[in-house]
Picture 1 (tube, rainbow, N blue to C red):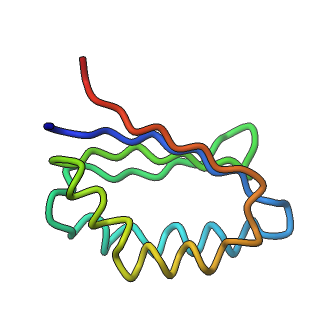
Picture 2 (picture 1 turned 90 degrees about the vertical axis):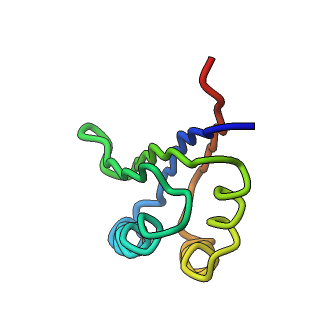
Length: 95
């Protein structure tokens, strides 16, 4: 299996907006430095600032799985667990 694209949407509870934003931003640099990371972009919705979208490209599923097992990703998950309203992750293969 080749390149994997991830599109993820995170909706934050109102009281968690600043904390979650800080945690998301902290993940950018270490993730971009990971083996197999081609692109890792974070966006915040202009109409609803509680919505964040990730667009990610990885060389393969193994690289993505390594990312999800990395210390910085696990720290993020633990830090925001009670502050998220919703999370949807799509793992895609280009056709």
